[in-house]
Image (cartoon, rainbow, N blue to C red; front, side, top):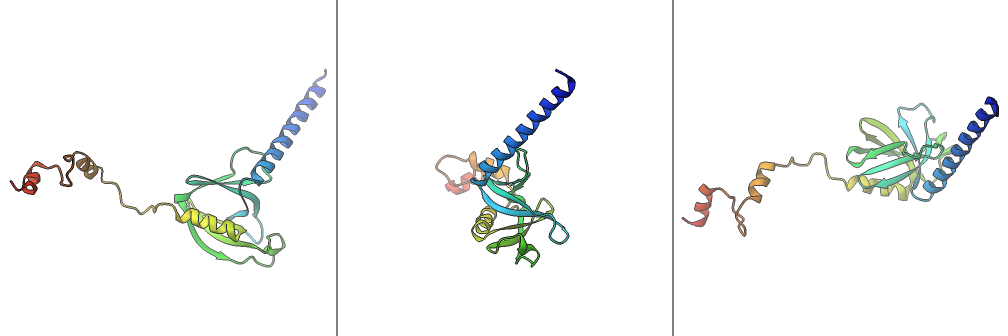
Length: 171
């Protein structure tokens, strides 16, 4: 075998693997998520929209581009980082490639702005998933108070402090 034939075989194998992974990704993702269009902002005009699928997994949602070959998600968003901003109708130019039943929403995640276009059902699911997350402004955990509460006497709601325990006990 010559060097040229070896190179051609290697290129053929790489091409077959790319087609296999692209087909596998397309067929497995298409049936397991919400079909959406997404783009990073700022974007000029109608540029930047990517067809893909959103898949939820716990506190993260993954966006898989349909035209990507990678087995990994193209974008991953944490529920705690997402802030929903506003919605808008599709412009006339966007209506050429965005379905009539799709709605557009703008959101921020990790300091970057994105736009998401999807059906009303997928948009409600996304909004409910985001709103179900605990607030980042929740109170900080006071570990000292938790430790004191864990060390108090059994069957008692009083704090375990000998000076205050006697006063509660009536002694």
